[in-house]
Image (tube, rainbow, N blue to C red; front, top):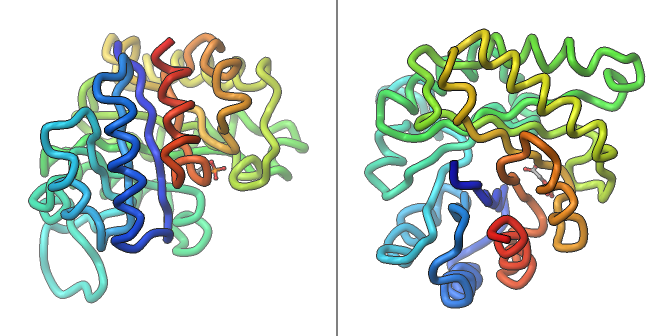
Length: 246
Ligand code: PGA
């Protein structure tokens, strides 16, 4: 299994930001890990065109469950695919919180992604209150059971464990806490998709940065990272790519 360094630009970046992606591909022409950036929807086509022929892949940050129709402001999975995307992030905690996305909705979006030939990156994670209450594994297990699309395989599904309280805060779980969740996810996934679970990438996300990437990537069952803030600068994301390639 090749590890995956995935960057999530969130609602950041205009066309000027494409220069960062250019710098990234110039510095990392052939990384040992897979390298993905998910820019805002306005930049997906431009980034995919710019990155053609390089090791960098392009992804979306969300898609609608339907392929087309009267859904003002939404973007469908076939549209992302047509724009050059290979992946789409689904169920990010910011979408679950800002847009009330449920596990069932995330599942339907993931099924739309698979139908369009995209790789679905399904995000899950506990809030700080849930961790404090000792319900982390229960919460994550429920999210996993409810969000996994029918037809998921190691080739079309990626899971990202992102504790809500670690996103954009500079705080991270201990390595033991990450290890506990990732081992739990691997086992739970096996119950859902059988042998495919062994090869399904399990990413850790939440305040991954150049200074902590190597130690997090050494944790068993951590097969890459979903990186927000540190993916905006080529130098920072490049250091994380290098750590995953080591
Ligand atoms: P962060 O965001 O790296 O800025 O904490 C991670 C994410 O939300 O995917």
